[in-house]
Length: 494
Image (cartoon, rainbow, N blue to C red):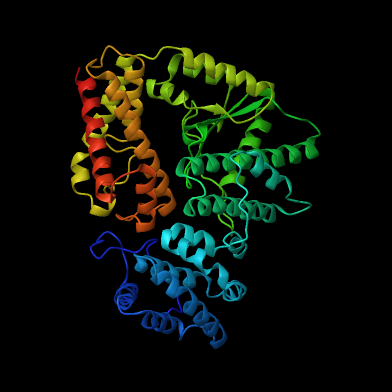
């Protein structure tokens, strides 16, 4: 039955998940899994065995049978066992052609308890685990996770890699495999409650910083070997989540590249292009990070980088107010004299006053653009509409909170002074809820998002936010969006 790889949704679909496309064969398997899990363990094991009996060799089927006999009873102890069983199906469907991987699991029954925790948490982490047999080491009970809340941990790991005379693709794959191992350690530590959501976010950011530094060092060494010259008059500025050390498991890197010296422009542009390529080129081991450079002065037009004068002139005389606000969430991620010069420039630019009326006008223009597309939005299918847990660019979401914080923290003439301090506390509380929800969503999904979160992820979220139950948490998220949207509207209408 499974001679072709199944294309199942990343997490178990709900019965009424109309926006999730599953073909008849796959839907039939999901229904069987749901039904048999309500009967007993033995029937469930027999179902798993039958699903693979016509597609694999007898030796492989025998090994899988032993795995099913060990892990299915463990998953059955979970309150929401259907989700763990569903991920077990996806997991085995991914690894069944990797005989070494299957042998490793079969012979290490002491890891099954930890494996079941991963399968019960989310499809995204299950997918990561299925890609590399080495990750099984991390879930061994005696494995000591060495996260120490310091970037040095990641730097030290990367420094031990011997690239030797490897070709480019081999080098990229080694970096990606090591990065995946480190990322998985962070995720697994969060699942085990060794670290909390905020700490995981910081660790993701340290990993990204160490990765960028590693790639830059590789590029600079390569250029020096070729041209025997060290080019140091360039800088990388991080924006957004990378800039504020609040990255999620799937965050992009928002970067702006700045250099000085028109004579060496070609070399600097080549450095930046190589950095983007190494970070975002997809190989057999995947990619490291998507890189977004649209926040540079030329946006998506022109060169990938800008000069010091161009950057200074743009943000002094030409940038929009929302860009000035974005500039406040930046940091320099490179070292050296030129980077210090850019850091001083950022301090200078961020000291300039920002007109509250210009910010309000730009928000209104953004909303006009959205309203012009309202008729089209009405006709969108349900699967294209925002999910309840999406908080970044939706009305009353994270972007609107950023605008409100600007108005209130700068004591704008546009704000209502009534209960000002109470409202500032409200912004912080809702922003914290959005932050933690966003972190969990990015551990459950990558691109296509279903309407439901796995129950294990919900439990972690409720525990971290100290809420009574999921209904209470969801209601506060929805009410938070309404409150933020209303308060911002009052300012815009003034």
